Image 1 (tube, rainbow, N blue to C red):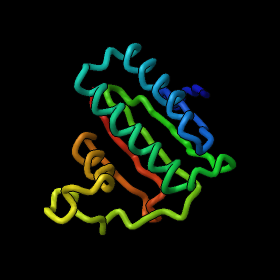
Image 2 (image 1 turned 45 degrees about the vertical axis):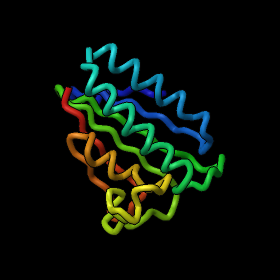
Image 3 (image 1 turned 45 degrees about the horizontal axis):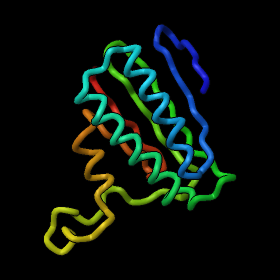
Image 4 (image 1 turned 90 degrees about the horizontal axis):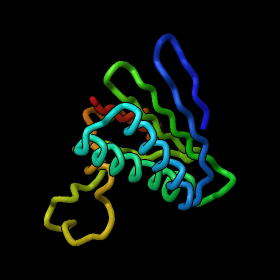
Amino acid sequence: MQEVNVQGAKLYTLQLPSVTESITELENLVEKLADQLQVGDDTFANMMTCLNEAVMNAIIHGNDFDPNKKVFVNVEIDGRTLIWTVSDEGDGFDYSHLPDPTDTSNIEKLTGRGVFIIKHLADQCIFNTKGNEVELHFKI
């Protein structure tokens, strides 16, 4: 993990190999920052859920479990807002045309809920045009 101060804001960066065990390093960073910044329980739970989902999607769908490809996680602390960015080295996806997981034809499917969950738990969720990067905002 790298920590940098940029114009009064703190920036932390992780470069994770595309293996499921990488999630531990992410969780350690989330817990560390939540403790330092005294993040409330609800916000902590939402943040951990969204980031786990975003990083696992990057590992599985973006980088196809290729350990030579990285998942990049950045967090900027800007006042009382945490701005997380998760990106992968994959081709991206069309995030605007995902099936609705609450539709009766999808309700019993075991996958397809991640983006839906992220959009509902983060205060703001922004995908880049390519679909291989997501920016998540959490007010603390």
